[in-house]
Image (cartoon, rainbow, N blue to C red):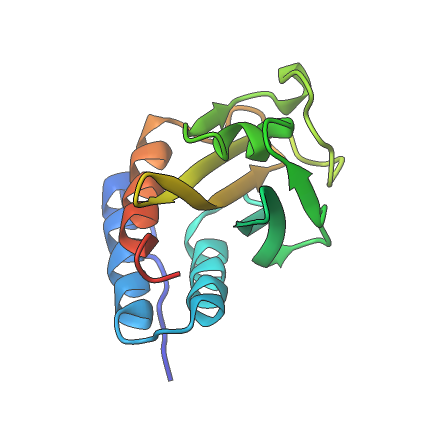
Length: 159
């Protein structure tokens, strides 16, 4: 049985180092992409406070399709370039302090106020995105971005 949980009071860099270590332990020897995304989504839900949604959208046939996640039911398909996830799917991390100010935001959950979406890139192509939503405005910052980008880089050959 695995018992991965964040250290209370840990700094963000330490929290993300522990998250990366836990994700590495769970995904290193597992060849199944869905299993690896599911366990990583569960870890994100455990490690990242003040999130109402954490998970993946996978690139399938030129659009994003819902993948493993923790949270409320979500939009199933997102076109490229539409919303925060669709913008990230074009290859650049999206750190959005107020989703209501983001042109074209897709409101899957009306409670979401801020979002961090990081593309997962393999061989110069986006294969998925990691999406984190929060009911708090400006919940995510540069330290969160660095931590989730490190996770995305590690997962790029495991999903």
